[in-house]
Length: 346
Image (tube, rainbow, N blue to C red; front, side):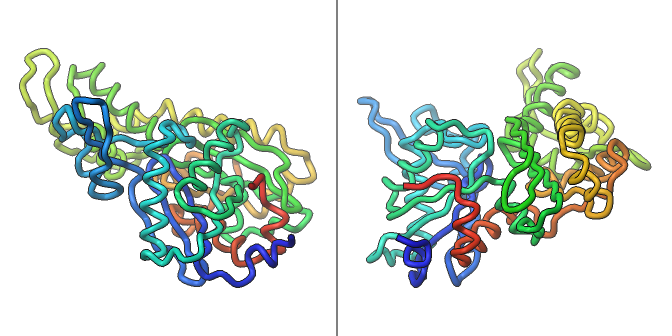
């Protein structure tokens, strides 16, 4: 059966960026129809039976704020499924929301996955989506999807380099002729940055910060290079010595120090990719530069740090948070392209 017949005429086909931090859904002919946190709130009774009480935005508001019988959890960890059952419920919620209940014909679905995903993890993604209501499931590597999403000429015999920094993983890939020439997938991303901020304040001030507060600090104060006068911000947490709630004033210099670990890992991985790229393709980066996408692309001055370390032009993708799902969507709309970039399916 050709991909034209598979994807030819059904308007309820979907592409999904199943991210550690956020899940985005693209519906054929409609564009992005869902963009919510990858969080599920679960209530457990005395018999150990679990019931889903919230998904997405509503569930994220519960993080760190629930009684012991309710847990707000992320079913994705480091870019792959950590809790199969909860991920299935989350996918069912997002698929239903994207189709608005119109499920007479089950959708065909493309899902983006990290290049470092294992065969077992691939099967988990496919089976979870099938159980959630998909008719057919196809996988596409995240850097390929991101490259398509930003409009890179991936079908040409020239080098295209993309760095996609998500919540759970960072994907660094060199792409040419619709394929990956070199790639490296690290389980370092926005979540590790949040964790680095929490651990930094714990070590330096004996101050315990919540996950949501750490994320807010990263978004508002996160910087890869400190320039000009340092910014200051008050954050609420708990003093680990006294156990009493406390307000701490932190600076952008401290946030930069906290983030230096995960950011340096990303920078060194980019440099390693450049060293392992064939010279003919590497030469193309001098003119084209390196494209940075994903939520991590929004870290202030990351482009300047990468430029300083590589000497190459660094381009932050337009709408970096949505390029992966848009790339999946463009592949969904183009059967010829889809045939070339699919990883696996069932």
